[in-house]
Image (cartoon, rainbow, N blue to C red; front, side, top):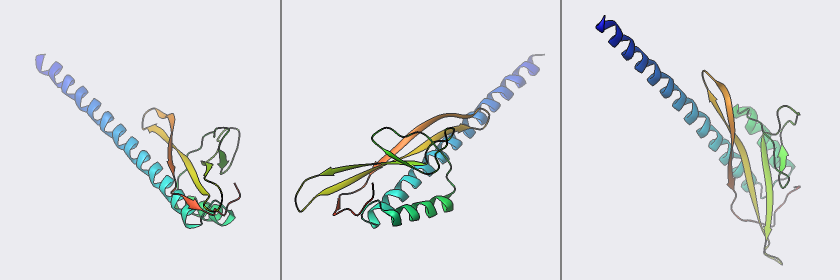
Length: 144
């Protein structure tokens, strides 16, 4: 009888370890993918020297190739991009900050994408923002 109880404890510990390990892997994969998408959007904005129609087309092409489908709401200071349904929200949000005046006006773009905590057994639990800012863009060519 003692052997049967000891075996069930070990089995429980192994199952808990497997659940924790698979949850950790799911979180780390989704988190790294969110950072990759954020960095991709920032580099496209920097290459096009602003958020114009060309940059938006490149970002849409980038999204179709990377397969990242996390949506959420944007704040009032940000402009959301991507499909906006009442159930899903936006794919990414961008806010613009202009500093300086005169000949050297610097523009900074803050990009925010979303990271979904998606565990195998429980499904989607939380959505967290992942944000980053571009380098200074001089003479920004944008429509934001």
